[in-house]
Image 1 (tube, rainbow, N blue to C red):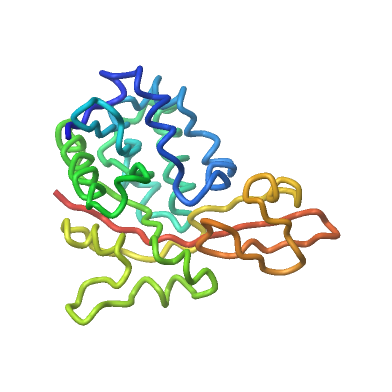
Image 2: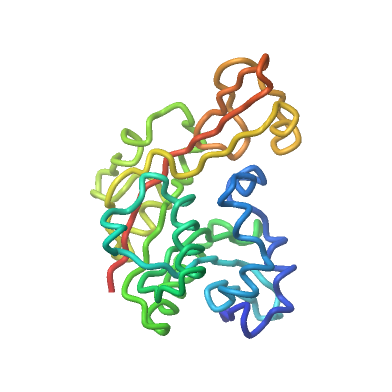
Length: 245
């Protein structure tokens, strides 16, 4: 296996995107998700779009991240809006010409046939290496715990602190970060917020929403729907973790 970036291999953009999504298509339907288009990554953040290739040169994993400034006078704490606000910070810094000092990982996606092989660990290591190579001081991650999909109704504050008998986090994705030296900072309760009509949600997830809370494929929280007002709102919490160098 070798890891390349989009800057050196722009021809791999399409194949890398075909590896799948984090959770599901709906994750990218919020305002922040719409900001991180493939074209913008190619234009602005290609060095931070990493792609793992197998021995035949076929993409088997991707890791996306954006550089930003943190901490700063106007950013003393990691945001309550997690993933959403981190993307906005990166866009603001780009527009303002502010030099970044931190890398924020947005997603790690592994090819279905390679899941469960531990490939996410070298992808995270590669992100840390890229941050160091480009003069950044830390890697921050609004972590979306994988196992939370099985318990969408459990509060993140309760789920995230569960530990195994050996003392490590019970959730395997939180545990992967912890084993690489990351420490949990806090839960960000509004990490991803997405709203849409009842028809939108059915198109995104295949689920026709009913009044109240609805469990959706790939969701780690329910969608709250009001059929009369033709609206469904999804708000998921994540966990901020920091990988210091």
